[in-house]
Length: 258
Figure 1 (cartoon, rainbow, N blue to C red):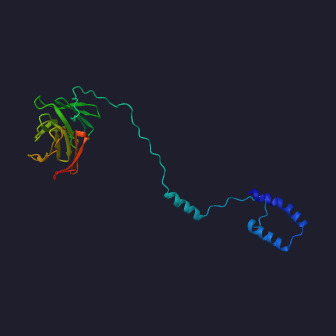
Figure 2: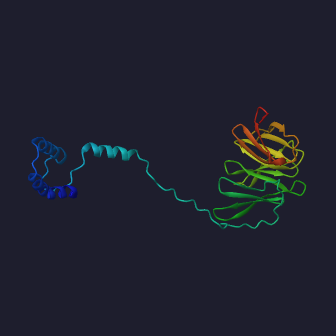
Figure 3: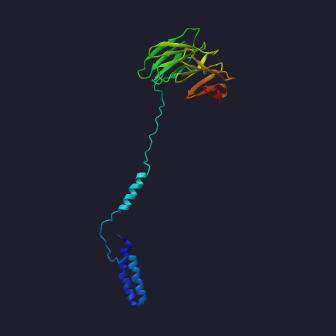
């Protein structure tokens, strides 16, 4: 109901009586009628009972098209970060040396742990622990471990500069790589069949584990004390060294440093 229109129609009769008392010219009366027809559309009913007009088809189509292009707002759930450790492992005999890599988690959810001269495997699925290998005092201690991408084979770096390759499923030694390092092997990285090793002598060695003479490339990072970490992706090797926390990127097969 239009209250403004109802008020106008109710008071229009009194206004006409007052206007009739004072004579108006025919031009003014014609102007008043024309203005009423234009603005009021000859509406005379005070109460209008009728249903709400339905939306036009064009408006409905427009609304559907617009709503289909609007992005659906879906609030992403907040990531839950636990405040306490899920599991705590007791590791007696773990060497406290920042320059060694004594833990590595494999793709099959098995954690390799080097404790002194022995390497253990802890299965996170069932919580079982098994001993993979143990080396003698002359070769040990173990200075690095690294799983291959298949989650079955693992490389083990030793203090005597050797690297052993083991089959964790069969629990047997596959081969020993006599690298060109002059000191312990503290960093390992896999890239398919290429195993990259790094020692505290600054030497980086790429080994093809498929061939008998495994060394395919060597390069030296001068003026460093230790190779902390190795990452091998595609044809690049990322080397993290201890001095000033530097990182060096090296392109394999070309020997270009960046």
